Amino acid sequence: MRASVIVFPGSNCDRDAAVALESVTGAAPRMVWHGDSDLPRSDLIVLPGGFSYGDYLRSGAMAARAPIMRAVVEAARKGAAILGICNGFQILTETGLLPGVLMRNASLKFVCKDVHVRLESTATAVTSALSVGQVLTLPIAHKDGNYFADEETLDRLEGEGQIAFRYCEADGAATWAANPNGSLRNIAGIHDTSGRVVGMMPHPERAADLLLGSIDGRSLFESAVASLH
Image (tube, rainbow, N blue to C red; front, side, top):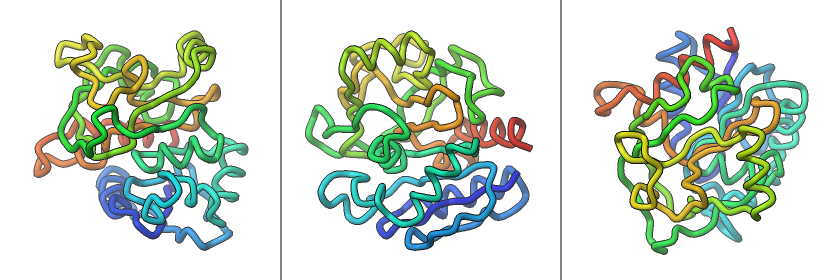
């Protein structure tokens, strides 16, 4: 599997994503600078977490207009798998590759902790090897992770099975108490109609080694390898 990680000024999880990918694939991914216009041929493209361009204007707004994103959008249209994590999810909504927006957390505070998420869809490369209803423990670290979309969009996401992850309790119950940021319908991640473009607020790359306390996130990268090899 050929993987690339896009690096923006302000990215702070690009190396984490690269380490997780290399540990699963056995090969280092290409690190692609935001100012480049050409993207290496890639089966999987990761838009990592961080604070691209310092989150000026709004999270992901400037990064979505970086030169490399034209190539990323084109790659998505041609069938490459795209995984946007945290800030990467914000960038995907800003480019229009995914619907909705990520707003300021309901608490108006930065939230950094482990959360439980329930897998809702196996229609993507990063979830195809998992099971619907499976509960993963993954870390979050964001101030703008409150997913919002109008009711029509939310109903369409539900109806077409495009919700990838939902915040939940350890037993899988999607309660309001388990929602760390106010996201509508406890949405922690979504995907497009093709299943090729996935955005999620939790960080699987930060839970990909036992030294980090969990390997729940590793299963997403292993799923991508199995699906895209």
